[in-house]
Image (cartoon, rainbow, N blue to C red; front, side, top):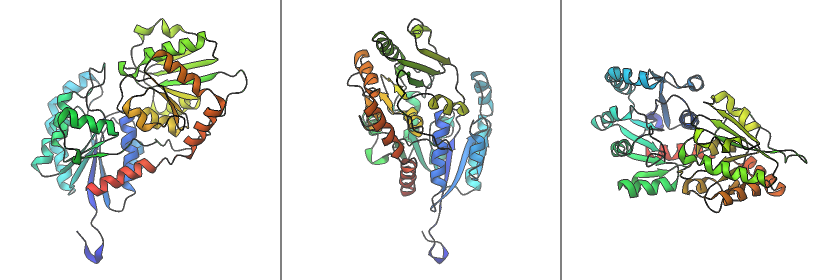
Length: 372
């Protein structure tokens, strides 16, 4: 449709994310930046008042709809009593601004209470599905029944990897033509970082495991592989930074060279942890993709990953990281040893330095504009 003087009509799009913290907020912010830069989209954003990056969203100078959600399990139960008011306010905001389309960058526990609005009022709804089923060992993640409800309410689904798109078709019989694959982009932290230099002679090589500690992330595999390297005389350190339970691995955690920060890591601390390491380890035993790669690439830190479908789509072996041959302690330890080779390490860092940090985000924004 053309407006007066032949100017194309802008699509009014609402980016809807009510999560509070973690990778979902960062992912939404990067996507918002790319969408805002387009001439064919008029962007609106709906956020939780508890979002840890709220001030950064305000800096975008985009109309914001801020919703009071919850801060804890207890407040979640209390908040359910006013959910009908939130739903009504959300609908009124959409109607008042003439919003035609809604994009969810990540499902939220309140999403099922909102979804019926979209079909009822013929609002084009795009849902981003990061994982087709709950992670191994995740008991509080988005349940499979809720994922099914989410995609059934969607006019279109965005996945971050081909493996997730395939799983949607196999697990839910979801039409492939209603799915777009938009690979995870490199996060931007607002400043330049110097690429790593190979450690000087006798200097320790530092690995980083970053993020929530969950069963599917394969921490026991990593700890055993690291212990193997130490026993073989490698000059290495491993920092484990993230929230979770490490009690089952308490003996392995005593391996010399391991430094642990078992707590929630604030957004402002991310540059410190990545700045102090040489390589990032992703020993996942199940994975659709990883936002940690988006962090690591931003700081030009190559990753050592297991051969999971989503991870091998993100990382090219010997070019931007190292992929273990198998999900075993020996093969993962071999891969950690391999990335410490000076020639290969220098090549990986230089290749990461050449990556365009805006490419994937701009490509995703372009696909979304085409859908609208």
